[in-house]
Amino acid sequence: MKINTKYHGEREIEEKEIINFPNAIPGFLEEKEFIMLPLNEGDEFIVLQSLANRQLAFIMTNPFRFCKEYDFTLEDYVVEQLEIESEKDILVYTILTVQDPFDQTTANLQAPIVINMKKKLAKQVILNHPDYRTKHMLFSKVQFEGKKV
Amino acid sequence: MLVLSRKSGEVIKIGDEIEITVIAAKGDQVKIGINAPKNVEIYRKEVFEQIISENKQATTDLSSVMGLIRGIKGLRGK
Image (cartoon, chains in turn purple, blue):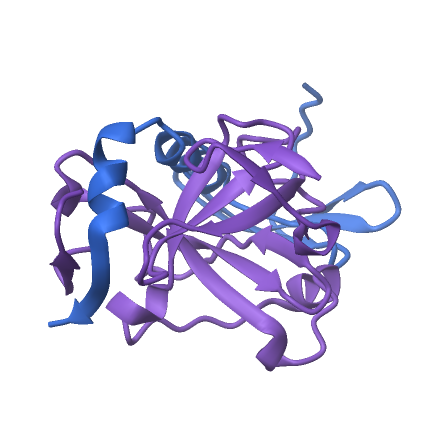
């Protein structure tokens, strides 16, 4: 099927690539189907693109890459909702609030996106952890290599 | 809004499965215990609203920096 995307133009995608958010994402309750599209050649940045709404796209990255001590436990209801059987099936991403200039970009460590890749079920999990907030500076802990294109 | 007065230790039942207990009240702070089924998600409202607000900010169109992101070859821990 063909979909319109915010950053990748028109894209041909397969049904099996679709990730379902049964409870949607807070603030965007209408959209429940998304697809992941890499944004850069190193795959560090992934776009979480809504199928129904071209304008709705989040930029995500792997939180463990810039915050090695990042750690949380999934509540039972999350494990149940996402039908998680094994930790191996899970991917965790953090949503970035991209800023211009880019080095001011923040990561939302309080509400990670947890995806069960086996079942293609996902959820934005809200953590009750005092260390994790909605805005963590991304580049206080990492350097990025590359050029402006 | 339904308004009920409760003393410490007293309980409010919502439907069959949710119970809210007043554990303690001190000054303007009330400590509340909640019993609910596992599939009922419970958050402090301001936390939930903060997540909504951050999600909205995160989806703002920033085409100007997309070129920069596309050019990034890798992230390195310091």
